[in-house]
Amino acid sequence: MTMPRVEVITSVERRRRWSREEKERLVAASLEPGVSVSEVARSAGIHVSQLFRWRKELCDRVDTGSSQFGPGRDRSCRCHTARR
Image (cartoon, rainbow, N blue to C red):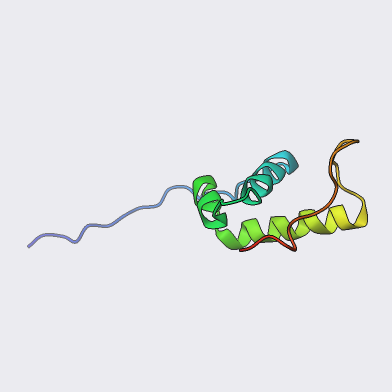
């Protein structure tokens, strides 16, 4: 009689911390014309809902004027008009 195989988990995977720059880079990539938000999320290893949340948060910061974008950059947000 053979014993069933048992998998032993020895460590706990921690949540990844994303810097503001990484989030903004992924959001910008997801706003490019013709780009699938799902593909951007998949390539980064995150769920698409996380990317949509970051897009909303970025738009909220831009709308209130507290964005970290430098001077001379377009501060208009395309999150509200971009297709999902």
